[in-house]
Length: 133
Image (tube, rainbow, N blue to C red):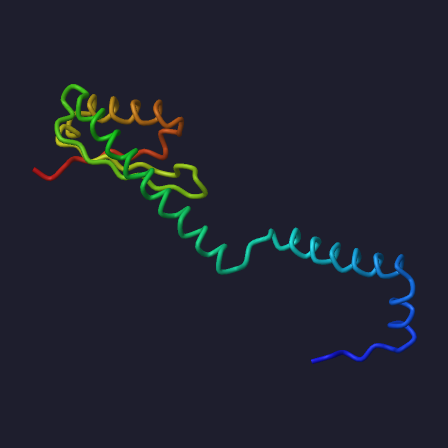
């Protein structure tokens, strides 16, 4: 659909190259500003990026949990260990440890200290439970 322009403007645009350059530059600048303000990414692309980021965080947390289980199970008296972490915004917000040897308070303390030291989180974010025999 053509937008009618006043004939005098179109004639003037054809005759004056500086005006033509100014109008074209303004249009390009407007397009660049819109691109920068929207982040240059469409909403659909943002959803894909967020989904990929969530998948990466899940994969990272599973790798972290597996490494924690391995190291914690090597603590004297811990026995078999399972670990689950929760995170928000890329920051670990909580850790649950389930261990066969968690009946012993000393083992519980060592497991908690190991996790708080490794992850740099407070002991209030770590819970240790006895694994069902």
